[in-house]
Image 1 (cartoon, one colour):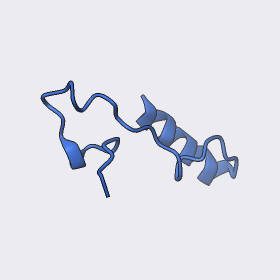
Image 2: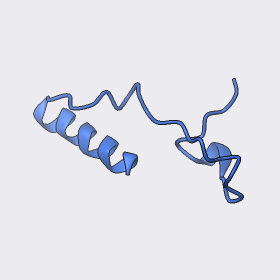
Image 3: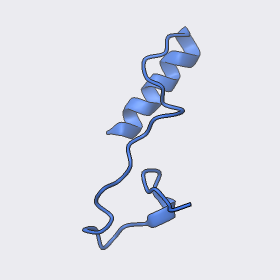
Image 4: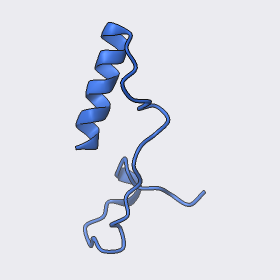
Length: 51
């Protein structure tokens, strides 16, 4: 769901110049990786790597 909100916010920002959400700096971080056997890790946009 967040991906849809991010894309819609980006579209409105670019087309209308109205910032609905700071989609460039804020994104949720997955908290299910330990419970999900199918986690894709770094391929997932919500996976937070330890840097």
